[in-house]
Amino acid sequence: MKLTPLEIKQQQFEKSLRGFDVADVQSFLTLVSNEVEHLLNKNKELEDQIEKLNDRVRHYERVEEALHETLQTTKESVAQKLDGAKTEAQNKIDKAEMQAEVILKEANHQRQQVRQNIQRLLEKREEIIAGMNSYLENSQESLSKFKKDELGIFSFPKDEDVNLDLDLDSDRKSRFKLDEDESESENEKNKT
Image 1 (cartoon, one colour):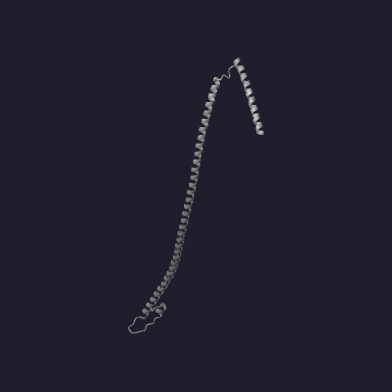
Image 2 (cartoon, rainbow, N blue to C red):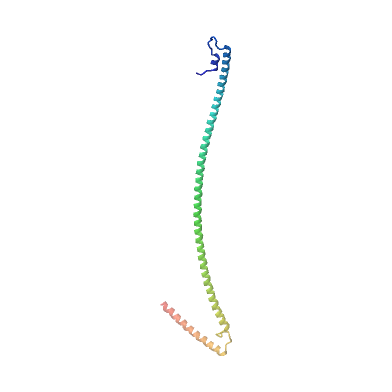
């Protein structure tokens, strides 16, 4: 049974012989009533504080849950972005490696072509040098013969040699005339 301070104050006891002093009982009941009222008020205040604290705890629990969800979402987002960045980086690395391979192949091909061109140029150089050496040797030989005048072309002719030369010239002219006649007769035959 729950008692209120008012019930305690208004409580009446039957009077009996040799019973308690009514004033003392009344004074004690007032004291107990006041104390119970004070305790009930204090209890109410504590219950209100507990309710407020419970509200705050619930609020902080919601905040904690929201933070936890945010943290989890952030972790997932970071993980996705990290995976995406890794994938993109790997794709770029693969692409760069493929481009590097193409560039290296092209460079090797060009290097091979340059080597072949150099080899052809060296061979051509050797041909030119050989040709020039041959030409120089022939020219040197001709120059040497020219200097020696082995045929006596550049010496003054003797009188008898001059007559001989004239006879040679006449002989040449007659041969030339014969050659011309033969050539004309062949042309006439071809026409017919």
